[in-house]
Amino acid sequence: MRGAGLTVRDVLYEAPGAGTRKKIAVATAASLLLLALLLGLVIRQFAIAGQLDRKYWFFFARGTTWSFLGKGLLGTVEVAVVSGILAFAAGFFLMVGRISQSRISRALCTGIIEFTRGVPTLLFVYFFFLVAPQLGIRLHAFWKITLPVSISACGVVAEVLRSGVNAVPKGQREAALSLGMREGSVFLKIIFPQAFRVVIPALLSELVIVLKDTTFAYVINFPDLMQNASVLISNYDAMLSVYLLIAVIYCIINYLLNKAAEAVAVRGKEKGGAK
Image 1 (cartoon, rainbow, N blue to C red):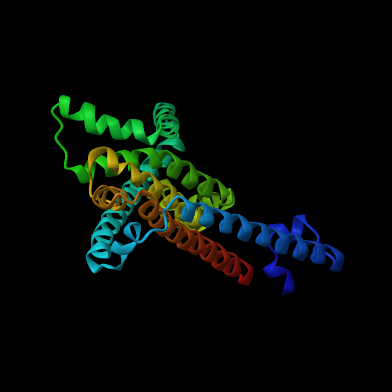
Image 2 (cartoon, one colour):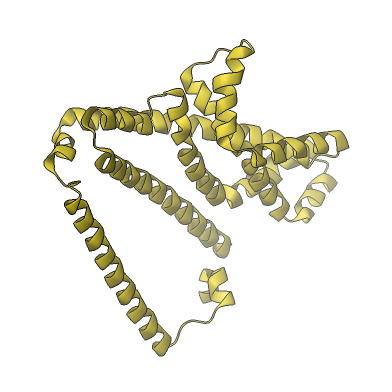
């Protein structure tokens, strides 16, 4: 069926006519031209300021530079992956507590969720870096950045999962209970698998935020991409060139994650339309 491929945008907005498409093309071309001119002015200003001199760029031709940045990137990815896993696990239990029948559990989990969502990630980092050692809690630098990032993200993950659970038709739960299944089995075998498939794109998008939060590793001197970039800046006095490269690397990673989320969302819609 042709309608199976419709998106929300197709339903809410009419397809542009020939005249509108022409205006969009002209506006796009003008925007690209303006952007190119702006980029040219920026590059010209860099040249005038001497930022394009060889001394600020020559070290990128060395394999040791890329190896050093690669180790930092590996550290960033490790923190992001472990933080994402911990955030998902904690978010799952918080979500279960918030939708439970117990008022105490709902109130407690709601409070934790709102707290983790409201407090900036940097404050959690400072807690594990400055306060925790005074309480006798000694952690490796890896955990000093991984734990605060995961704590900051778990509340959002819990709400994303809860939205997915609420999206599953309640009739499925009632039908399963009428067949004699237990409440826990219904949730784990029927409700949550469907909810998880729905929210996978949102979870991948949250991973982008987790990846960005790993940049706070500079506070604790963990050798991630930003920390290693700072070392290069100190060695070569090349702030602009190094930070520009790091920004491009982060943009590429986040772009790939966003594309993965879009691909998963499209695949989910195709499966849903095929049923």
